[in-house]
Length: 139
Image (cartoon, rainbow, N blue to C red; front, side, top):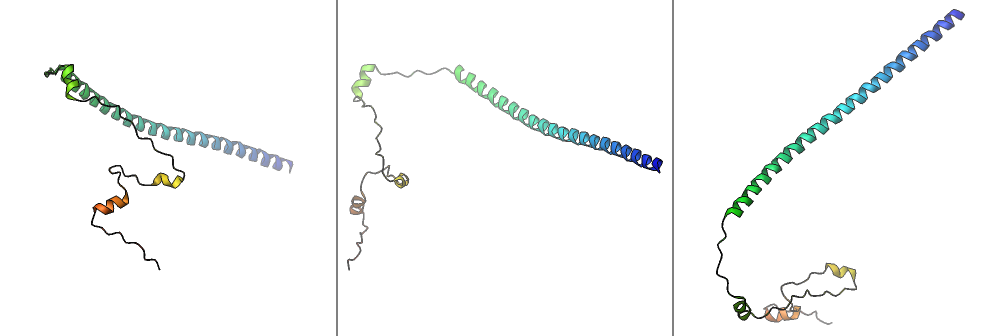
């Protein structure tokens, strides 16, 4: 009986060791496969980036050729009037000022439509058009 118990324990220990080794090996294989899959994806992305880079380098080479051609073309100088004639022809220009906007109290007024092409009021627009303003009847 003692021999049977000993045999069962040794068999169980042997099976446990075998299963542990098989599990460890399967985990190693799974990790290697996952790493290889990531490497393949990286290589494919790297190839795509290299293709894009070579296309951009080709465009850059074309642009450089165009710049060289542009620099090689002689510039035809036009007869420029004297500086005195320039100032006499035009009145001096005043520096442009950017109109200051007033801060509005109501935050919803930020979304109000502005009228950049006209500064006339609504009543002035009605007066110049043939639209009749209808007032509500008091009653």
